[in-house]
Amino acid sequence: MYTKSTPVIAVIGSDGSGKSTVCEHLVGTLSKYGPASYVHLGKQAGNVGRAAANLPFIGRSVGKKIEKTRVKVDKTHHTVLSSLVVGIFVIRRVLRFRNMLKLRQQGRIILADRYPHLQVPGAYDSLTLPTTPSKNPFINWIAKRELKAFKWMTHHHPDLVIKLNVSLDVACARKPDHRREALSRKIEITPKLDFGGKKIINVDADQPLAQVLAQVDKSVEKFMDEQGFKKVIKGETL
Image (tube, rainbow, N blue to C red; front, top):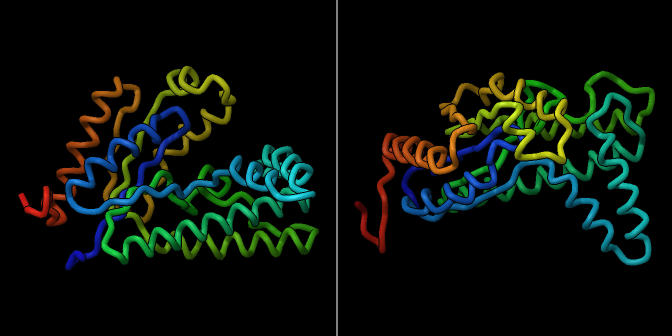
């Protein structure tokens, strides 16, 4: 067990910026400093529909409705069903966030793929439901629960944020199945997020993968050294 609090390192960026690849690589880099855990703190919306589809008897129909409604939850208009889906996502995110905190308490270095924020409501990894009152009391109730959950999660700031900045053309080329307008909005929002003023490293994700990985490795190793963590190999501190 470490004598000091282990860091939480978050990797953020638009779809097509290479978050998953960078995270997979960084787990190995961080493991040189001690036990490290990868956590996903995004919506993982598609997984909910697939999980619901496996329920006995009603699973298939519910799963189809959730998957059909999933495309609506980022829009201005929300139905009771779409709000219910949002509520399911929020519960899952809170459970994953609590698990992340538990892992950190156990002395594990945390690498987070995405991180919740309240800086730009409605943007990716932020609130889905509007904070303005709806005519439907159930939707209002879900919205209040979502806001409360995000206030709690965003009270815990990451120690280091790695921003993968990608151009729109490159993101579209890497994610041809994604809508250009949606990618454009995410790319535009990314520079505006600071997650409470913690240390931020900006990476040009248009670069070849080898260069991106080399840059994030160098930045993370420098950060860990600054925090007083040393590389450990076979029980020996370097």
